[in-house]
Length: 292
Ligand code: CP
Image 1 (cartoon, rainbow, N blue to C red):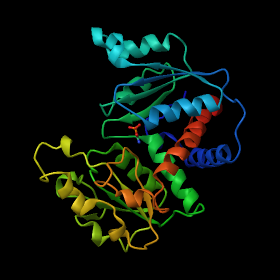
Image 2: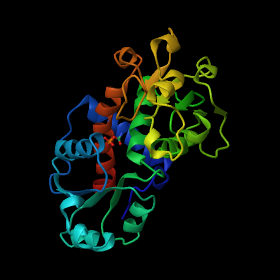
Image 3: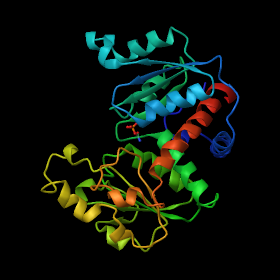
Image 4: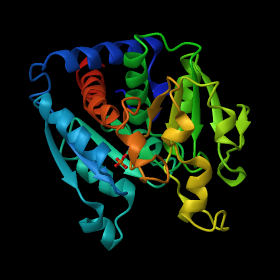
């Protein structure tokens, strides 16, 4: 039984297969490969993109999907996470897709070895399907040639599971990674760290902007979001005509993370990431439910 807790669960060969399958699914609508499969989603945190993307991916491949809303489940009556999961597993699903605020929840459930567990985002530790769809978007953009490309990750890196998973995967793929953030947003890292966005713009092929999560920080770092945006918002004035691919996992805080103008610029691939997310999640479901 194979799980997806983080991308290290996949071999290099499997990652190459995922990229190939996602590309093929994007080119040609696939047959109902998973018509006899049933998935359950268990999201303890809010989601727009990931949950709906998994549902669309499952349905495109013919699988059925059931959503359990933990805010209306027996978790509210004190049932433990493990008991909730065990009860869902007793219904014989072919996989459970879980999002949780605690870093180790997907691993804890995977260790029960009852059904494949797919991590849809855990704490600030891992968001492997986002990392893989971002990889797919970059591989597609650079025609497969991402080794030695340089990416700047900009924003609240310390709170970001997208950054954590992305850094591990992009390092593995041979990319150069720069971190750009105010000190309190910067994790402990052996990567090159910058406080000023303007210092990296001539060095990078890709910018991954992250949502400013000022509310997660106990001390007030900036007077308001405008003060943060003044230093870190990706604007046309900052980008000029540089040939930089601009990514963001969403939700984008307009004119704080990325300006309205840049969001409609052809260099910005935020909605392409969402589009690619469906194809990558189809590839992941195929690998875990059919090929493993
Ligand atoms: N990128 C991402 O995880 O978005 P959601 O929180 O909307 O799923």
